[in-house]
Image 1 (cartoon, rainbow, N blue to C red):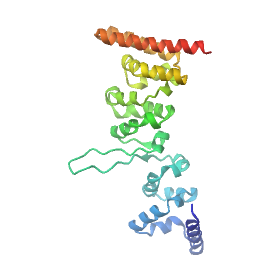
Image 2 (cartoon, rainbow, N blue to C red; image 1 turned 90 degrees about the vertical axis):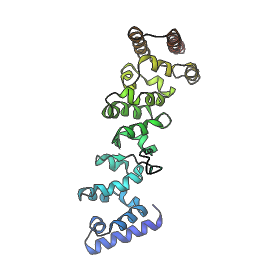
Image 3 (tube, rainbow, N blue to C red; image 1 turned 90 degrees about the horizontal axis):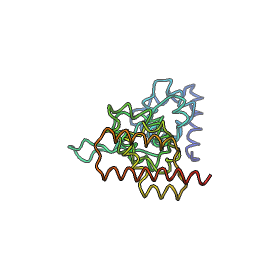
Length: 257
């Protein structure tokens, strides 16, 4: 908060004390335009626990959320305390006939998915688009476990490709058997995505080695898939080659202990 704003707030609080009123009463007397201007120019004023809580108690949650949605990083603790959810804003559509709106997903949304209001599948897809660059594994896992199932009857079809795109090779060491069902992919597809030649080299270069139970789960799923589906010779060779790479990473991991 800069010095000018501090002086303004000090004078405002002094006026409240003299008139025996409070901020909520004062704010309620402002027009919608004046409230919007106040929010735009003095968002940090609402970061006060007393002000924030008093507005919630006065039934002004929709107003306070205008402030929060504009800069949620400033209010993380208060959002958590009052069990609020931050929306994912959208860009205006390009033209009158264009109904698709691009989601504007910030660092906050990727860091705190538990504080985000995912209203529909488009919000989930928007979050997943850049999750591979910006989201930690715990954040991605939260979305896969707690959010994705609520927005698609068939998550694999709706989100599978985005989920696979989100999985960085840095995640490989932390994936365990129980994570397999969250990743919206069959064994073949996931194996081929995680352990192709490029990823294999990156894993070795960065010492990112998988867990044995995760590889066993992948292998079992690939075997089941082979029994259920008709594979081409080319596909079978690719799966076998990538499974061999995954197992080789386990061997290298053991040698480095």
